[in-house]
Amino acid sequence: MKTLLQLNASLFSGNGQSSLLANQFVASWRGINPDGSVIVRDLAGDPVPHLTAERFGAFLAKPEERTAEQRAVAGYSDVLIDELRRADVIVLGLPLYNFGVPSTLKAYFDHIARAGETFRYTEKGPQGLLAGKKAYVFATRGGLYAGTPLDTQTAYIQHFLGFLGITDVEFVYAEGLALSETGKQAAVAGAQAAILQLIAPLSAAA
Image (spheres, rainbow, N blue to C red):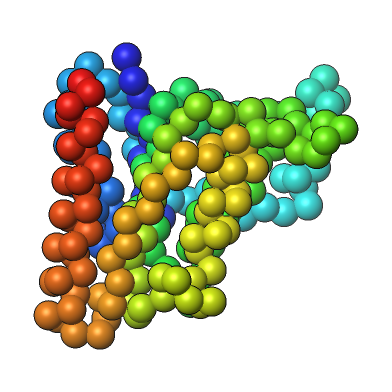
C-alpha cells in the first residue's frame, strides 16, 4: 500500500491556489490508489514552531540525557519525520511570499532536517537517508518568476529535498495570478492540464 504526504504551505490552508492544485493531484492519485493512504499536514492550520536555540538543543542532546521538555520537542520532530519516512509520494503546495518560501514551511524543514535521522555526515559529505521517494511541487506566484533570478524557490526546494535524498522532484507552476483575472484563469488552467499529464502515466502503470 502506497502512502502520500501532502504538505500545504498556503496561509489560506486548503483554500490557497497552491493547495487547490495539490488537492486536484491528490484526488486523482487517490483514484489510482484506492487502497493508498494520504497524510495531510496543513502548515497554516497546524503550524510547526519556529526553531529556537532551546529546540535545536533538544535535537542535539543524547536521548537518555534529554529533559522532559526536550523529549517533547524531539518527539514532535520524530512525528514529522515518521510521516515523511512513511511516504512514497510527497506533494507540496507552495505559494511565493515576498520572494521566498512561507516561513511555516521553513520551520517544518528545520524540524525534519536532523543528522542521523534524515541525513548523515560521511567522509564524502552529507548523505540523504530518504531516497526512493517522488515529490511533486505545485508552485503558485502572483508575478512571473520561473526561470529568472527572482525564482528563489525552485533551486532551494530541489537542494533541500536532495539533501535528504529526495532527488526525483517535479514542479508545476501557476504564475501571474495577481496580474489580471484573465491571466490568472489561464495560468490555473495550464497547471491543471499539467496535472493531467502527470497523472496519465501513473494511471497507465496502475
